[in-house]
Length: 452
Image (cartoon, rainbow, N blue to C red; front, side, top):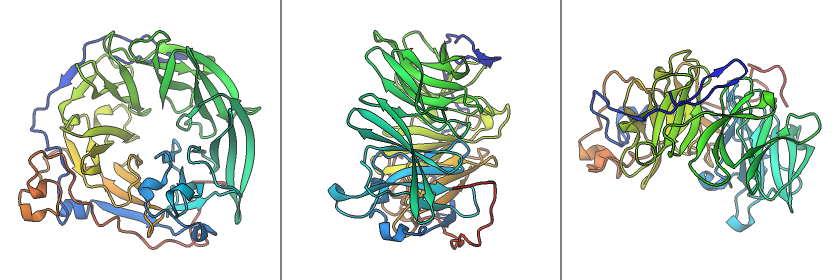
């Protein structure tokens, strides 16, 4: 296997193996969603968890006319346990005059809802936000040559702010939230090294953890304790990009993680701590492709043919948890981008087929998480439903799903129109079916002992 095992206190050495293209014994599905608008699979694919028009002054702040374009950075960030999420959004108005503010979503209760966190002045559109497991939201702001950090939290009708300090650097990128729920790390690139900072969760404000030689990017957690962090590193003098593992319990000790061939760029995209499933991108097969492997396994990385449909880009964004020692049965959520827009893909290593579905209306493209029982949760936002989650059950791989062949079944896009390429999504569905929002005074407390 091209990925090292994590045994004892640290990661071991990475093995070098040949990449293995994966051949399917069954015909692949066409590179388009499995049904057009009006067909049962598309119409009934999603079930809404609910919607919320907001809390307190949310109606006064308003929502963007185009929620897909309202997020300045396109980032909808989830905590590791998917209990909270955060994004930067804007009130309606002229694009050059919009007032940006952070927004926190609560996702682990009986009904999803969003809480705006505006302060006296609007935020800059290049600010970054990351949610914590206690409901607070970390925000990074650029102030001259400083990167300033604060924690935001709702305080009745207003927003509370706890300044954490600042880091002096020209640019800094926040990493995904740590699985421990309280720590947030960031990368600051230098001329020949990349500094790793702990910007939230430390004892005395931002702390510089280590400097990693070369240029680092990415950021994938490999364990539930928030100790092992994978980064994509390019050596200081150039060369191929390789994923490495940092042991934060040992001051950021670096060990190799992926090396498919000596000259290939091998980047880690996602990792599931329960099953050990790894999703990666590498040019080892001759060109850039998606592949999968298992952490600690001696088997080679595989590059399924079904994950490279023509004329589209495929990006994994969520792996089904809870599949202990069964990586091949994990369902993977995929964002598929083509000329017709973005839609949703579902794939399992064992199934060797790419199931494709039209995205629910208002989907925050590339955002979502799995439940242990195989339900994909897709956050959605529209002017009429400012906070909603559409549900998509992972399809079975026992029988291939066939796209409709009747041109009359389509609605202007996808296989129902006789599209010979099979790379366009079916027409957008009418949107998730929304349950009646539960008033907060009647909503039961569940899964949380304290919240702010």
